[in-house]
Image 1 (cartoon, rainbow, N blue to C red):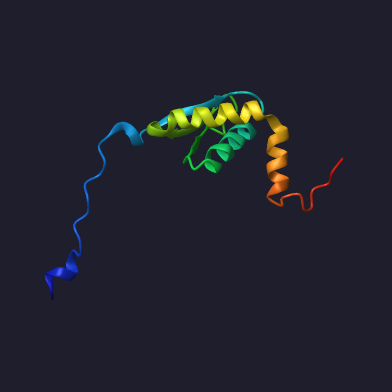
Image 2 (tube, one colour; image 1 turned 120 degrees about the horizontal axis):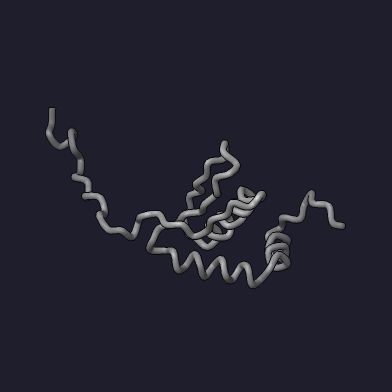
Length: 107
């Protein structure tokens, strides 16, 4: 047996920096916290920011959190501020521009 086939390439050591640690970008314990967290996750992931939702969904008194890598926290805050300032009308326009209005009943 050849030694080269046992370990084709040495792996790089893991990144020890704190930049990849997850930090909270959004937290809510409102009655609709799960929906809010999913909306925040959608906005951030559309901007290319990876997210993780943390919750205790089996315990309704615990909050929902959206966490992002520490290195992208400021970018996430800016994206959320821009989305909040644009309002729901901007999201609806973007949805329709993407061709997402099929099957949606208009009032």
